[in-house]
Image (cartoon, rainbow, N blue to C red):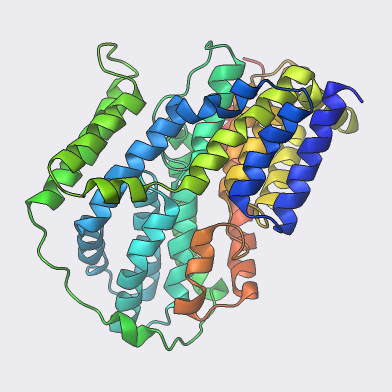
Length: 423
């Protein structure tokens, strides 16, 4: 069997194992580059090289700053203040979705949801609203909001790496590159949830409400304000680095911010080491060699040619729509980060086969993988609200499918405008 055939076989097995979820995810993603090595597709050094990549450093450093923001209670205090000014259910749904999405654009969606669950439960108890009416908008906003900046989720960095590496540096992804679509998508999600959500969201009673009595956040001390300043300063420097060449790269800026919150004892060194999710690090690191192998062996080109031949004559928009729907479907039952890592190289090859700008297709894969809202299996944050909201599997389907339709239409409208296929 050719190298391309072996790589395609490993790719197919990876997809199948992710879907059936019979192996621990960390073990599975590490097995992929090891299998490629024993098959003679990659060298040993290629297995671990991504671990010291800029994207991994950026994820780890921002996780430390995010942990400090949560520990000081700053995120909780801001949420309490915002929700206090929402008089009714629709305004609460809108603000919960928008706020969780905004926070999630800079820290993980899992951390965002974990911190905001007690606040949202308390708000639901105070206003006499069933928690399920607010918890699903909470996770939907946190999921979609990760598309606003490059540090919003590991998938964002995977798409960035694909675009910059496969273009040999001729294309770059700025800090807020995805915000062109991410911001409209978050606003559309918040408006959709506020306007049509009350008809689609489940209304389930929860015995957990009593555990989350509405309360006023404790007073924020100087460390909380310092951490907020570090976060805002880090983001400002990351954005400015695209235009001011004397500033350090994004991952160095993030490291300086992480060092600052430890140096000033906002969090301890032990808490800093515990802050980053090793599963996310594994996904980001050990799925990268598969994408590179698919490109180098021609496996991604083979898939691209097959997809193009099936839709021959229908144009790039239909191809992009087909890929979007395929990725979206898979991300409802397997890790959205893994789905993004598997399909970004394929999207790039499809665009190159057409002679089109690959950014639109790669970013379409990213957007589709981030609309993980239809099942509690899609992302950990979804499963976190099952018990507090007394939710069932089917409770995610109606709002999730409707929201996915909104995201699909918006992606298909904006991507060809922002990234013309044939400029």
